[in-house]
Amino acid sequence: MAGARANKTCPICSVREPVVDYHPFCSKRCADVDLSRWLGGKYSIPSAEPVDEFELMDALERERSTRQGAEESG
Ligand SMILES: [Zn+2]
Image (cartoon, rainbow, N blue to C red; front, side):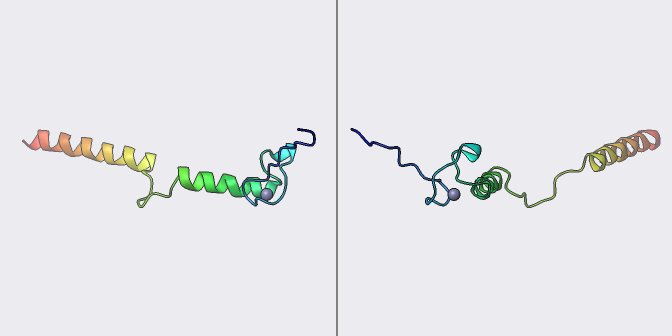
């Protein structure tokens, strides 16, 4: 078994061997590629824009005042 050597390569480019700093990638570039892939899959861009907190508060406030108005007149 002499000379048995882990023949691992960078999972992104499959060419170069991983370096300690960017393990298991061979370079920052490949690490970035993997990160963007991971983020792209994890945080897929939603079709609608995310609900804005202020917009939500505004909507609640409006609904509340609308109800109050309805109660007063009703
Ligand atoms: Zn690479």
